[in-house]
Length: 294
Image 1 (tube, one colour):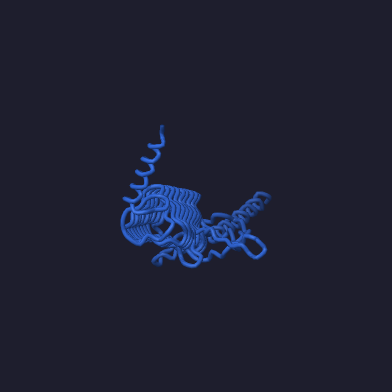
Image 2 (cartoon, rainbow, N blue to C red):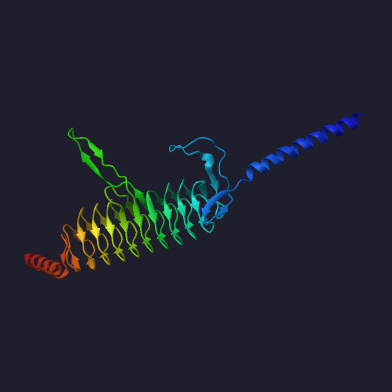
């Protein structure tokens, strides 16, 4: 009799465990839709934490992306072919196109759009921006952060100007490591199609750069500059704010543009002048210094 009671008790416990196991399976089998061409991508829960971040987004709404192991928010629209590496995060309402590759440590901020076939390196930060098709964004790039805009009030306090617009990167653009491109304040910051930007370049807010431009390392472009098409800036060229440069201009390394350049051609010096004039200035200075030597 005792053996029979024990068997019944064990059978009852197994039945309860089966029911609990089935409930767990049903709870974990929900699919998260990638919203890409009507396809659904199944994601696994990235966190059981029910707390919220500063933006009011529940951590529980983030899922693990199956192709690469990165993390994405359930409201993000991600093509199933995209690769999101472990440690990368895609925030709410972002759009990631087909065959995009996002490296580890990269943060795709809310409402960012990334076009198809774009490759993003490690530790990149993208906010308030759109990235075109077939772009290459190298390690450490920051796009879409606030520009350097301030004013002094009547009491002498330095106050921040609103930086509310976006940065827009065209198609087939390559951006070198640790380059920074600020978002706009009165117009979007724009990088034209097929432009190539080297490492450690600073592009201020409201800057508009045309198509097929080349910016070499450590170039600094202040806010609200307008640059035409097929412009080449040598290493460490500086461009002051609100200056315009027409298309098909080339600037020698370490030049400084202090006023509008209205004619195509080659320029150099500080301030930048036509290249022949700059060479005459250098030659004259050399000859003068040579005469002074006893």
